[in-house]
Structures are given as structure tokens and as C-alpha cells.
Length: 223
Ligand code: IPE
Ligand code: MG
Image 1: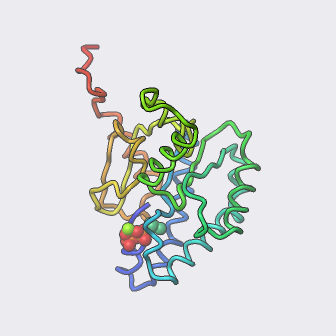
Image 2 (image 1 turned 30 degrees about the vertical axis):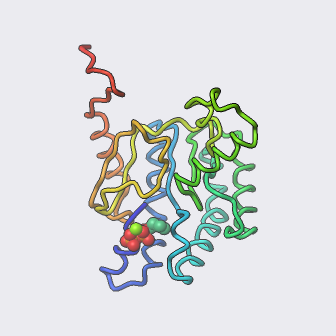
Image 3 (image 1 turned 180 degrees about the horizontal axis):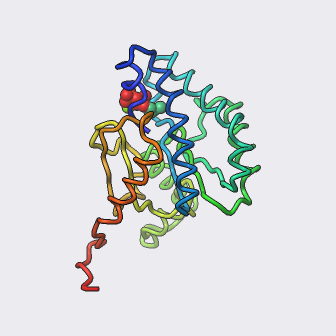
């Protein structure tokens, strides 16, 4: 969900107003997933590198994420959305935010609609490091390690590899998002900043995705 800060700055607003404006896009996309029958949506809310930002912005983002969970969780629950989280739960994440996450997780865990995963204090490399730690701690012999061994120890082993990754706001890079999982994902980069990315942009992205020819290293099927 990139481009909140720049969106605000070009309007002479503080960067934090951009994050606030992004909430609207996020819930429009959640609703659109629901309408279209998309089963898994994962959003990058805060990366392991975002701690480098000015202190004020970091604490705004932490408080804002907590506030959104409190304000929106009943609505998500009513929509039958199952909320999950991926990321490191280290000392940098305040205990109260962890509590909100756990409460939201628990409230929505049996829902059968969209699985909405929030990546918070998430880094793709950190996720792989954490998986390797678990493999070593389990005492797995080297010659027994396969791709499945790693995939099963990611933060959410149930999460399917994404079909489509959308990055907003004109940056053409992955920035440490789901590194293992997106090996064969379709990548879509758009100049639209996140606060302007709503229902229609998401539908356009799905249309673009549907026109892609996915071969997974094979050859085109002749139908
Ligand atoms: C929001 O956009 C994404 C977060 C990390 C919270 P940015 O804050 O990265 O906005 P830009 O890239 O500075 O415009
Ligand atoms: Mg950015």
C-alpha cells in the first residue's frame, strides 16, 4: 500500500494524513474482494525496515494500525472476513498492539469468507530466516530439507502463494514483500498512489491479471 506519504505531501498535508486517507482504499479493496469472490488478500502495512522512519511517523503508524483494528474489527467480522497477521512479534511491537491482533484473530478465526492478512513488522528475508531457525531447532537433517520443509515453516503455512502482487505509486520493486511466496506471482506496478487506489483500480488490476499467460516454467498450453 505505497504512496501515502507522497500523496499527502503533494497536497501540502502531513504524511500521516496520507496514511489516514489510505484506510478508505483498504476497505474498498476488502469489500471488492468480497464481491468478486477473491479468497485471500494480503496487505503490507509495516515492514521490518519501516522502523527507520522518523519516530513520529513510526508511532503514528503503530497507533493507527491499533485504532483501525479496534474500529473495524466488528465490521470485518460481520462481513465474515477472517483476519490474520504475518510478521515478527519482536520487542519492537508494543504489547497492546499484539493484544489487539490476537483479539481480532480470535474473533474472526472461524469466518469462512475472505482471508485478510495484514503483514506487520514483516520482512520477506526475516520470514525465511525465521523458517530456517525453526528447521534447525526441529533438528531436521540436511538431506531431508525440501521446498516444502521451508514452506511449512513460514508465518502462515496455509497461505497460498499469491497469484497477483500489486504495488502502487510508481515504484517498480518488491521491497522485501513475501519473497519466498511470490516466486511465480504476476507482478503489477501502477502509478496510482494508494489513497487513490479504490474499487475500480482493483477491478482493472484483476482484468490485467486475467490477460496474463501463466506458464510456471512450462510451455503455453494449446488449449
Ligand atoms: C504507506 O506509504 C506505506 C507504509 C509503509 C505505511 P508510504 O508511507 O511508503 O508513502 P510514500 O512512499 O512515502 O509516498
Ligand atoms: Mg513508500
